[in-house]
Image (cartoon, rainbow, N blue to C red; front, top):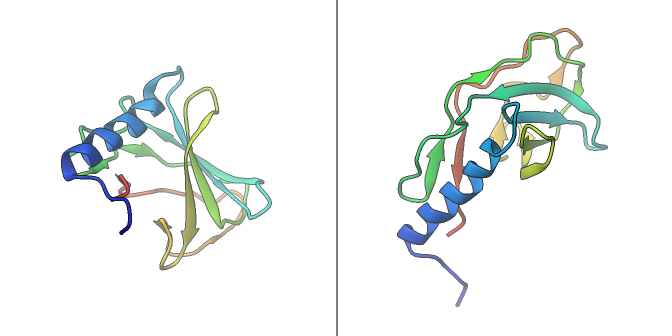
Length: 123
């Protein structure tokens, strides 16, 4: 039998994780990276970054777009504290990934935006 968590525990876990993004000044970020870890684009989270979790999920508040991306092919992203400490590591793709983009090839100077972002604690 696999280890699982009741919904109430998952909700506490989600709050614990996303609240870590608010511990530093300035606000946290979503940093899109190449497979080698080069930054492609950096978006700024609101403060607080996420609302209160419910049923093991927390939804992000407004995320400020990066109006001038560095560019590259993004395959992963990190949700970081304002100090730069990674809190959540995500895969990025056009389907079947943690973060879905309409195109993972980002050109230099392009605006990169997220319309929504949800953190789900593991079951």
